[in-house]
Image (cartoon, rainbow, N blue to C red; front, top):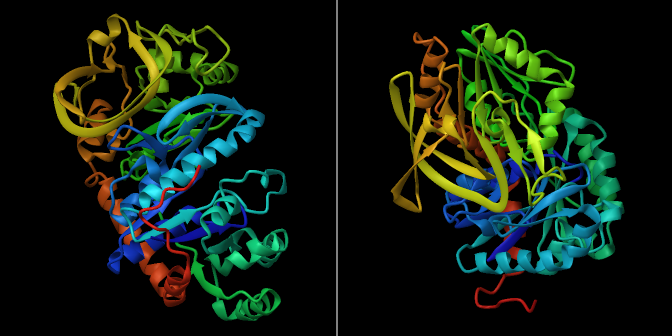
Length: 504
């Protein structure tokens, strides 16, 4: 197996998107490719078929590579639950909550999991396309690094450095990053890619020549700014909503620990829906539907809701006939209380919920991680869908006797369980399932519940939409990158023996 790593001069330089694009280019050319990210920090995650948890970006990259997502694609996932701490997920399973200093000490052991996953993938794939994290020039994080050059040095792989010209200062980013690396790390960088360029490329050429002369490294391509490229985000939330003929308005409070906000991408792209993320200081008044999203720290996010006086606006919204939905952590918020006896998410043993539904939730250290098939029933209509669960809580109470879903875990298709609930007055619905609006039939059911039955056009099929976007991205990479040189860089790299397990 050959390995190529994409590192960036900054966060959001385009590493995730570039890896996805290269995965699709190479798989279309007949290569057996897999994505990899040694360490990811994100609250958007996905569930693999074997019941593990990985970053959403690696799940998207797996789709780009036309392989099933697996936990080895992202062996270390950090899910922040405070300003200084995060849940540490190792090869798909939650290990513990750690403060930043404790995790820094844990990195040596984390590298063991990273290398184990790398070498396992060597048995199954010809090329591994690796995404770095942040910047390799973070001086304070260099010791025991597993996310960038520490990993690259350990597996002896070549690196391509990408920078975002739309931010400005692209030459300073590239030259400065290179200058802060050690001699061996500098030698590992085989070229540069400039991302998100707008304008006349001839005006950039003198700068490109200077960059190559200054560094001795080739520029392997300049990718244009792809307007309206809509792919699953790793963490950044897309606020733009280009729809102006919407029939319903949906508000989603932007919580500090919001997770899996990709749930809302199909709604944001729907021609009949105006979906807005409501920020601190803004009002929830004026929506047809308020959706409480998933959260990595429900207690803290409930406190944030109360600080914004949003609960009073939710209560008033319901009194005036509005609708409310809760997804995962949002479901838990709608209940009477959330108990956290093991301090899974916070130091509080119990948190008062919004009290809109008659159930309580107890958080436990055992996280539910599964892909499911489900039947969603609302207003006498039903639809079939697929979704996934990522949560630590177990909820119980009378309100759950009116379920929104019946689910079957893919790992145990014979067991049917109820999920979520519908309030007695049918103004509130809730579910633990993520990804339900990826299915147009579920979105249609939601709109009918909101009183919209005459649709402007068919809902977005997010899977078809994603495929079109990936092919568009791949076409741009094929056109604007020196793919022959990139393939040669891969071919010249070290070959990972398939039958060797590293000494750990």
